Image 1 (cartoon, one colour):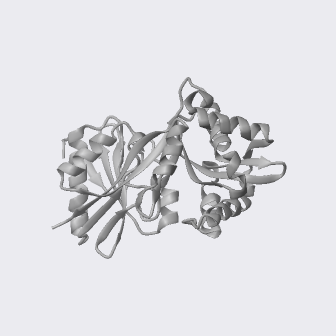
Image 2 (cartoon, one colour; image 1 turned 60 degrees about the vertical axis):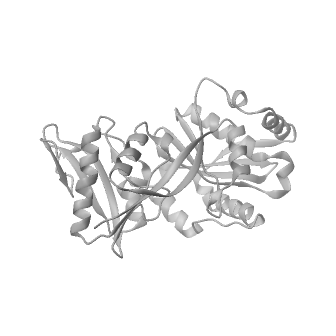
Length: 311
């Protein structure tokens, strides 16, 4: 390890992080996943800064990051040198070996979440990690263009048609989360799909992280016909966690109006990326869903899970 830096399992008093953590890596969300974590930090003593960190849940000789979340893996300062990050990963492996860990599983965030994603991937590959799965995320970046300026002609027609037929976008109070969940669950059930969380699990999470959740909906008269449960996973990123629309409104494609409203919300709130999530079905790319997102101005991004067997 470079001189002046050290690896610890508790943040020393008065030390502060030199970076913003993603929501799924903060202490509150980690405790929602499990009470049992090995937290590892890279600190610089001179200016009392935390430079990097990772949290592992250890079970059955496996170290998992995350346990139950869309991603986990490393958080670190944008100023960290490649050598320091490389050495930090090595130090983490040494600590895990001491705890008899035989397999490390890291689920990385999508590459477009951070400018140093390629660096992280290259270091992991160079240290002998393999990509055990690859998903395709997609998201819409905020820029000078309006939503209408980003989407293709067919989606423009659907957006216009939805408005002409009386569909209205609204931001929904967080107190309506159970109703929104039930509508999305119905949308999924109509298509033979399910949700990864029960309403009780989601309610506990929202209660603990209420300020990070946003609800959006599209209404026809008083009926909620399309909805999104979104999470502000970073000050610059809004993640469309769950969404869907009722089948009887397929002809109006209300999700186009839903995402239009969310895009405009991001612009108002100075959010730089609207993450539309992954597009997969039974472990394979769902190309029709991916194509739909790309037609609405989204860009694709790779989301990898890494594994490494320890000696």
